[in-house]
Length: 600
Image (cartoon, rainbow, N blue to C red):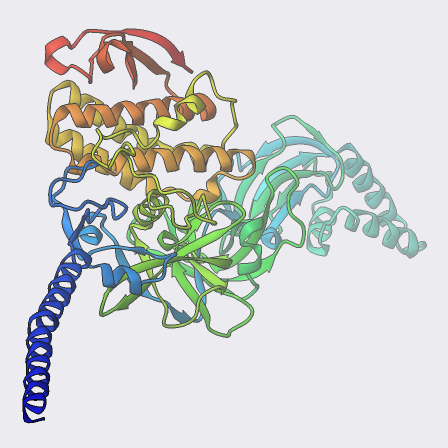
C-alpha cells in the first residue's frame, strides 16, 4: 500500500514538472514569435513612400529623382494624406514657392469701380449763336474774315447794300414831306425801317442827313469766337440768313463715351476727374450733369456730359480728354470682392481654389463661385465664398494643372478623372512621356478658324513674344534664357482674361491654354537642353494649332519644319521671319529646316 502511494506521488510530481517545463519552453517561444511578427509587420506598414513636391501623384518605394521633372523625391507623410480631403490637391511649401502660389483672405468692401472714360471738349450748345443779317442784300464789306476771330457784342462785322432798304428810305423822305397832313403814313415808313432792325437813332440820322444811305452795318448780337464763316464778299443774303456762327467759350462741355457695359456704374452727379494732353500733370474735375437716354446705334455708346467753366479759354473744342469715375453700385451694402487673378473662368463656370491649412499640411480645394460685376482688377462674388475664406490669388493655373495630373476635380474636369502620371504604367519607372502626347491628334491638321476680338489679339501678343524669345534662346543653346522665357510664357498666359474669348472661341482657348500650361510647367525644373527642347516641341505644336484657329498676329507667322528633329520624326516651330534659326539643334545645325506654311 505504501509502495503504491509512493508511486502515485512520484507520477504526479513528474507530470507537474513536465507541464511546467512545457509551458516555459513553448509558451515563451510563442510569445517571442508573436513579438517578432508584430515587429516585422510594423516595419512593413511603416515603409516610407517617396513623392515629388511638384507632382504629388508620383509614388515610389525608394528615394530618387522625379521621372517627370527630375527633382529630388521627398518622403510622403501617409497619415497626412489620409487626413486631407480626398478631392483636395496638397502642396508642400517648396511646391508653392516654385509655382509662385500666393493666397489672400476674402473680405468685404463697398464695391467701388474705377471706370475709365474717353471724350472730347465741345462748345456748350446753349452758348452757340447764329449771327444773321437782318437786311436782305449784297455783302459789300466783311470785317471778320476768318474763323476763330473773337467778336464783341455791338461790333460791326459786315456791311450790306440793300435795294429794298434804298426804296424804304425814299418812301420815308416822301412821307416826311406830308407828315403834317398824313402823320400815319410817316409813322408807317419809320416802322418799315424798324423791321430791318434799324434803331430809332439810325432812322433819325437818315432823316437828318436827308440823303439815301446805300450800305448798312451789321453788328454782332453776342460776344464770342467765330466758329464758322458762312458767306463771302459779294454774296447775296436773305433776311434772317446766317452769315457767321459764334460760340461763347466761357463755359464748355466735356462729352465722354460711356459703353453699355459701364452704363450701370455711371449716374448723374458722379464726379469725373480728367486730364487733357495739352496740359500734362494738370487734373480737372467736374460732375456729370446729363446722361444720354439713348445709345448711339452706330458707336454703341452713350454720352455723359460734364459742364466746366473755361477761364481764359484754355480748353479748346475737339481737345481729347481722359477721365475716371470712382463709381459705386446703387446698393451700398458691402460685397465680397476677390482679385481677377484668383478666378478661373470657363464661360459656364467660375472657380477659385480655397486653401485649407492644418497640422498635417496645406491643400487647395476647387470651389464654384457666382460672379457679380467686374471692378477693374477684381470681381464681386455673389455666391460660393464666405468672408474669411483664404483663396489662391496667384499661381491658380499651376494648382489646377496639378489637380488635373492627380485626377482631382479641376477647371476642365469638375468631376475629376484618372490621374495622369506623366510616365509609363510599368511600376512608375518608365521614361517621361509628354503630358499632351495623347492630344496630338487634336492638333494635327488645320483647326477650324474662329474669330476673336482685337482686345483678345492684343492680350495674346505677350505670349507670342515670350515664345519667340524662347525660340531664339534655344537656337543659341542658352538653357537659362530659354527657361526664363518659358516662365514668361506661363506668366503671360495666366494674365489673359478669359472673358476675352466668348462663345465658340472660349472652348478653343480653354483647350489650348490648358495644354500649353501643362507643357510649360516642367521646363523650369529640367536640367538639359534636350529636355527643354522636347517640351518646346509640345508648346510649338499647341501654339501653331492655336495660331491657325485664331490668327492672332497682324504680321505673318512662319511655320518652320526640321525633318531631323525628334529622332528624325521631324518637328515644327513658329517664327516672325523667313530666316531659319533651328531651336532643336542650335549652333550645331542652325540653318537646318524650311518654311512649310505661312499664317497670315
